[in-house]
Length: 566
Image 1 (cartoon, one colour):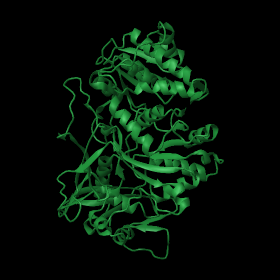
Image 2 (tube, rainbow, N blue to C red):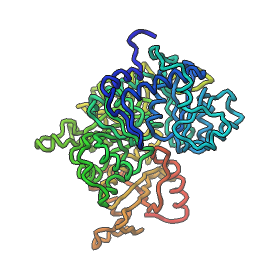
Image 3 (cartoon, helix red, strand yellow):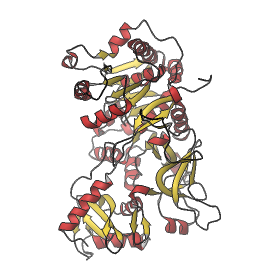
Image 4 (cartoon, rainbow, N blue to C red):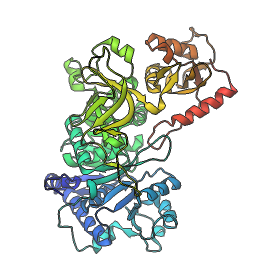
């Protein structure tokens, strides 16, 4: 490998210089200085190499968040092996499928996934040569046969901390991160050291991660959002605080107990934090938070307002991205208290050059591309009166190496002259803001017109009576597909399956009220839901919280066969 090539383990030198004798990482009751952490990584790297893990080998990891998870991530990549995080929320069949795809030399698990390990050891579809490693403190019964290595044992048995420089796997791959596809089996996305590093630099520049930060790991380290922000904070040199998995109570205890300055969320996490705060369960711990990065969907105005009250000094930045792009493609500042106090407009506020363009084009603004990223719309031309709507394409150092498949060479899908199709549809305004229409696969073809569910959902989410909403297309004889809105209303609201507006009651919803709401907000007539139905249970989601839209569609069709909706 050429000299000067980037490696995520190069962050160890910075950690050592900033935190040698100070607490660098906190995980439960365990606190470790920078020198203790770096020494642990290097000793573990040496032990893994002596145990037989080689450059290019895959080490699958199934565990909750901990300091030892991060230690293992850096140690594996230090010796040129590849980390493949498995989602601890998967069932056994999903875990076995992922294992069969990546064919790891080692599986590392903690207590939460120990049952997997026992079943996988007895699986006939996996090589008998796989090494098994315990992460953290596991029950003695799990290792009663002595067939599991432990991190402490590996460190003690090694001849000492590794002294050589970090090395690389073929194609510079550091990580295989699984997508959370809403249909079909998740794919293994191979990401390079370079893509992880440029993503980290972008977050440092845009979000402002720095050595003075105390970063709370709210997102799981098996997802690209959690991993990319973790590596960004490792490079920035900030302090790390870990809780095994997110819940509002644990998060607030960590924020207040360790004076946390930054963390990341998805809308569901933010909603839980706000609800917990409104119940009066918090003190003034939110005063220390200065940076919140949101992903996995846009925050509603209600959530932004709630977060602003709970974390009054926090700048809130939203990101749009995908696993194949190593996390974030675009960023947008939703709230900056420094600018608010000055009375000026937000510098990165998403404002279209023409309101007419916005009304005619539609979509949800997701901000501007990060400095290292190129975006364009397929088939776009500069001589159009309106910006072209089409497939969102991207190219740059942030892109994946390809989808992992041990049966054939790694290759990118849907690539033309270096441009990769994101699978999303949108348009780019004259000032460079990306407007997202939705997933191409979710597009509804109604009466010859294209309708993107996400755009309709974004409009209806603004109604004060709606808690959640999912829009799908169902077969229709006249229109080919018709737009159907599946609605969860807030607890103190009532739903009537009638065309009347019930104007005497302020907290009543009906299909006609929602359709009028869409008209008032200038949603095109063909995009307005023809059918609205009440949804009285939780929407089906993937392990990362993405709506399983096809499952909703099937259930909506079934309900429509039994009932008549207006």
